[in-house]
Image 1: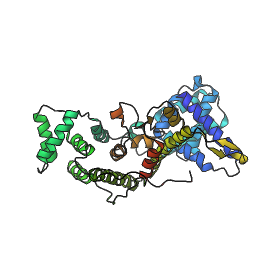
Image 2: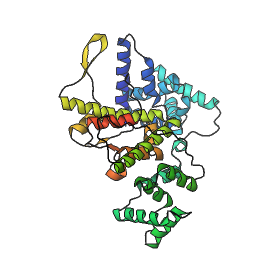
Image 3: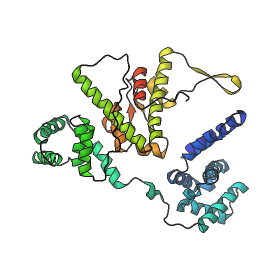
Image 4: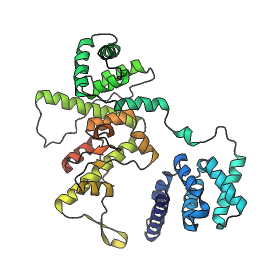
Length: 378
């Protein structure tokens, strides 16, 4: 934790130094980075490290207080510092008269004073920001293991029960009669969609039965984004491909409607980062760019993508903030990843969602296009 906080502080100093040297520097870029730290979870981690303020040393304490000053001052989100562990440490520093610079002493005094004089309708704790247990249970249904025999049985059971008014209940009953007590109604619905036994519209209808609050937010016709150079599929393959593209379009538009467009852009950028690395390694050259003062420098490739591709391993999609972490357990986003062909953690037995190593630069680019128009300014 200490290494992460110190490294991030060094990065902030570097960004600030570059901004001062550049005539058209944009402070908003730096604030955008800092905003990712203005959460209860992140400040909780900073608070844990601050508990050892006597052993940390002046520099480490400076790194902690600098970020807390940015969060409480520049961003005006002082409420995320109103945590028992942080306030307790502040009080200890204040009472023991531990030697600090005036800026940090002022910060401590300001936070304590603000906390005392601010009405607290509900305590802001770490637990209040954790995902609801029902959401975790719902998303966990995607991780239920299905053997090939069970998948084949599901297809046969669906054929037998598809005319029933309670198709899911009847399928579940057949599984239980054959000694399988592990399957749930939600996991059966997810598996029916995963095997393309039902359409996304049928999936929505079944989910509405399970959860009356479940709503279909998007009904937009799909647009094909297949490459013009790709061969035309046979009739059977064409229907399957068209359905997959349609599902991707619906899921993407739904996420956009839910104001999760930035997270789709993050996924798209992850694909383009991999594409850029593959193109560079394929050509054996490094793209150059004009830097400060007109100087020419190399473009730095994304390190996770670069080293994984260099070692010919699948590339993890690493979440760097709380929003990105949360979206990776959000059901529609997981379905989107599945439809696009990503390796899910349960399938690959890994911690992160992964981009397959065998995807070429062309495939990566075309999949990125399926997520929306590319921002050529970035």
